[in-house]
Length: 361
Image 1 (cartoon, rainbow, N blue to C red):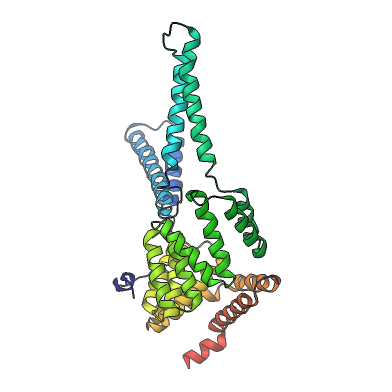
Image 2 (tube, rainbow, N blue to C red):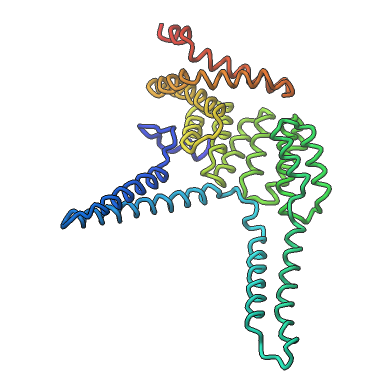
């Protein structure tokens, strides 16, 4: 369906994230510390030189790991930072420059005829910095948005929607930076509430406003998926993944859309990437492994399917906690509860002894 499905499949698949950078930091630091402790024993000759080499190598490995981890964190933000390209960073740099010039002109006053005149330069610099700060504060996301986000995370979607609409009314249309997050949250709430037409309008607005960001394309895809158009959803989610290629959630959404579209090879590739990047939520990881297991079965890859089934059989605790959470969340929409219950039942059936015996027979 997309470019991603045309890539050759590797012979050995890795679906667990390996924190190489963290391992390098810890390992390098341990080697360096042990070598420094050894130096306290006052080794002689070649041993002394070898210990110093170990100190240098350990420090170099730890530093390389730290740089790699920093680079990974920066790379992971690609396509996800609404502040990038919004014009705010140059303004903040200008504020810092003006404050520095004000400080410099205060401690090194120019030789004006009157000492009072020497205060003009720092006052002008400070006034210009204050004007820029006022302009920046005028484009800050309103408090109602943060209250709406908190209500959404607590599961109170009706209150979250009311607050996000209040935040939308508080901001003028030209406050592009602050309205982007407001419209994104409103699109999520409308999509999850079933108001797909209005949600689609907001998603299209997000894409038009910032086409280089992940969020608008992802919302377009999720809305298409909720509408039952899996093909269009895959196309939109492929665009989202192109903009944020290191976001596990994006690959997961694309994999789920390809599952709905019947593209087993594409679904397996996207779900492998999602798991390799590290899905933070245990339930999401469980669903990804379940659909990856089914995709491997459809692709006639029995060894990989069996490995995924073994992994699923070890997740009894996750299934129990998920089932308890679904039962306790009485405020959740009935459709979501039914969907979660059906998924739990499907996973339990997959890992049950009866299902394995029937398959082997």
